[in-house]
Length: 213
Image 1 (cartoon, rainbow, N blue to C red):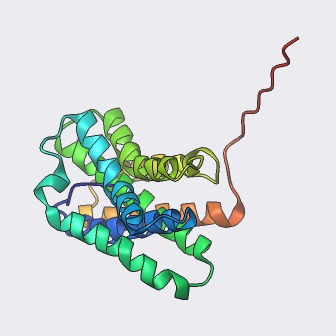
Image 2: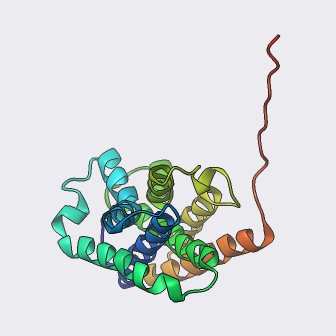
C-alpha cells in the first residue's frame, strides 16, 4: 500500500512487514480468481504499493517513493510469488488473508500520517493521507479482482484507519516518543480490526430501494 520507508525505527520495521503482508494478501486474492503468476505479481505490487502511490500523487510528493527504492518492488513481488508456493500448505486461508490485510491497513495508516506530518500539512489532511494510504491499496486489489472492496462491505475497516490516525496524532500531541507511539497505535489498531472481524462489528448499512411506477 505504500512507497515510503520512514526514518523512525519502529515505523521502518512495521513498513517492511506491512508491504510483505499486503503483497501476500494481494496474491491470495489473485489466487481466488485463478490468475497466472504474472497476475499474482501485478496484484501483489498494486496492493502493497498502490495506496502510497496515490497518497504521494495527491500530496504532491515527488518522486514517488518506490521509484527510488527498487528493493521494495523486489520484496513485494517475491512475497507475492512465495505465497503461491506456501498457500497449498496453509489452512483457513480466509483467516490468513484477513490478518495480513489488517496488518497492512493499520501500518499504512500510520505511515501515511507520518508522511503528511513531515510535509507540514494540516491535521485533517494528515488524517486523510493516513486513511488513503491505509485503504486504497486494498480497494485497488479488490477492484482488479472484480470484487466489491472490503472497505465498503465488511466489518469496521476505514473507521479503524481513522481511529488509528486519531490515536497516533493524539499521543504525538502528548509528547510520547515516536517509536512507543507507533507500537501502541499499531497494537491498538490491529486489536480493534481483529475484534471487529471476530465480533462482526460494522457501521449501519444504508439500503434504499425506490419503486418506479
